Amino acid sequence: MSQQKILIIEDDKEMNEIIYLYLTKSGFKCFQAFDGNDALIQAREYSPDLIILDVQLPGINGINICRILRQETDIPIFFLSCCTEEHDKIKGLEAGGDDYIAKPFSLAELQARVKAALRRRGLPDMPTIRKQCLEFPGLKIDLVKSLVILNGAVIDLPQMEFQLLVRLARNPGWPFTTEQLFSSVWGADSIDTRTVAVHINRLRKKLEQNTDKHEYIITVWGKGYQFNSQL
Image (cartoon, rainbow, N blue to C red; front, side, top):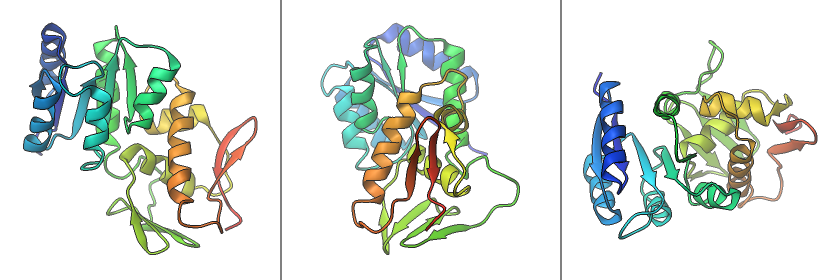
């Protein structure tokens, strides 16, 4: 199996090097970029499996880089930032980021989150018996090709949104707490329920943008979310 590739975009050369060495020793093939312009060049040249992206960069900033790359790829993008306010995190997630890690951070936790995200790029970690497709009125989820087809048209979903949808759709009518969803999809010990809410909101907008007939994801007040079992 070929090495999984990670692009580290961080203008702090010392921090970039520390992350590079740590992940390289863990078996990943890493590339380094130190400004926004070079970051886009390398992302397109090396086609990484995951990107670690600093928010504050010379040239194009991290938020805009994420927005640009989200038009080209659905690979996991992790933000790194010294900005810890909730609105900063929401801005990163709404730009298309899959995770937002505040500085200073633990290298071990970063590695764990990276491994979890890469592990979940294929089929989600679900029960042993797997269907190839999940089908509902107006909606088809192809688990083999990682495609979501809404009213006959493929809709673009980043991996985290796709994994959330699959987790819910495999269990219609079963209410999942935000903690359960975060743990199963992001695979990290520390729980960030706001991350789940932002991704659910983005997912809902995409699923309901072409139809007013079906409400696929239902909020269970005081509990979390479930896939509509009445479809």
